[in-house]
Length: 111
Length: 112
Image (cartoon, rainbow over all chains, first blue to last red):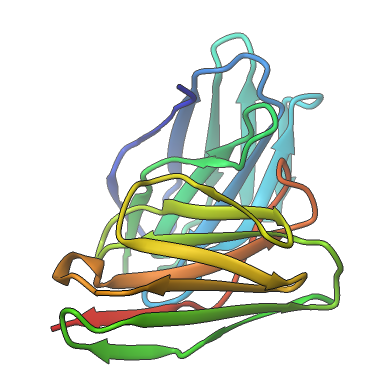
């Protein structure tokens, strides 16, 4: 069935450094890829998304890149800050079914 | 704008007791609705989704059930809770089943 693999499961970076989280998906027809951030005890919130007609999208310190040939997409956070510490989930759309989520990456930004 | 509500926010229930969690959406019509469960420190497990009133799709066999009695209301139920039902229950909505989902604030359930 449809699958989204997310790596790494945990990531620690020094404040100010960059963080990269990568997801791979199984269906080459997928065309929508959102990223969610979940702070401790809170709901997941959409932070950025990308559709397959573009290769990169940027919003301030956050960017997402998409490689359709390799079937992977990545979240890039630059100049990380302590408030970036959270669990990040990628997701992908497969056909006419709900989004499929990755298992999450716990990001810790060390001050 | 659209708003999604869940209640209760927290719940402590004994094993074997019934459960009813409610989710409502405001500011949109005919939303797609979802129930997820998240165990502590784990990912999002899709339990049920609904594309319309009375239409429920189950993703995981379990002792839970879902109902959609009204367009913008989604209910998660159980007749007898198990210890393994403890977790963070999230409701979500989307305009289309293939599009962005927006999550409610969640219900934290502890079964003792």
